[in-house]
Image (tube, rainbow, N blue to C red; front, side, top):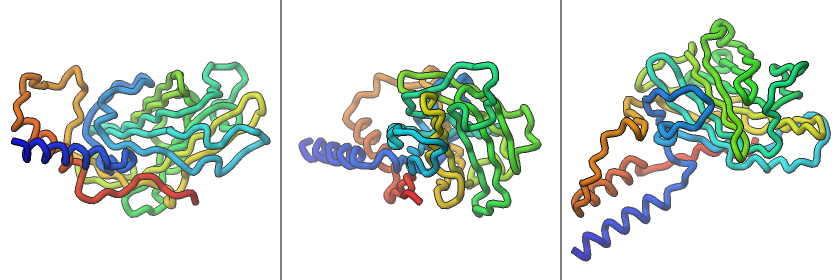
Length: 259
C-alpha cells in the first residue's frame, strides 16, 4: 500500500510541475455562450498567455508596458465556429461607449486584433479581425472581409481588465477534428490620460501559435455527469495517471520569445 501511495504522490508532483503555458496545443470541441464572460468550458481547452509587451507605442506614455502580464486567450470550436475568449489584464480600461469615438481605430480605445492562417503559415491566406474590447467596431480584413455580421462578439469589464469573446466562422481552414492552424493576437491598450496606445502580442507567423482541433469534448460543469461517489484508491490511481498522460510526455511551450 505504501508503494502505491508513493506512486500516486509522484504522479501528482510530476503533473504539478508541468508549465501552465504548456497546457497543450489541442483545441477541444465545445460551444460556449457568447456573452463576454469566461465560461468554465474554456478552461478545459487550449490557452495561450500573450507576451511581447509594448512592441509598438503610439504617442508618449510612462505606463509600464508589462502591466498587462497575464493576458490569456482561450479557444474552443464546433462545426459552425471557432471560439476565442481573450481575458485581458488592463488597469486603464476604456470601456464605456462614447459618442464621437471611432471604435475601429486602435488609437482611441482598447481593442484586439486577431490573425488566422492555415497550417502552412502562408500569410497570403491570412484573415484579420479587429474589434473593440466591448465587442464594438468590428472590422474585417483580408480573408474575413466577406463574413460581414456573421461573426458574433461580446465584451465585459472585469476587476482586472476586460473579457472579449468572439465566434468566427473561419474560411481559411476547415472546422473539423484534425484541422491545424496558426493564430496570433495583438491587444492595444489605450491610455486615456496620455492619449497613447501600447500594442502587445503578435501579428505575424513569427509570434503565432500552432493549434489543432480535437474531437475531444469540453463539457460545461452544469452539464457534466460526474460520479462523486468514485472515491476508491484504484479510481484515484487511474485519475492521476490519466491526468498525467493527457498532459503529454513532451511539452511545447506556447509562449513565444520577443521578436
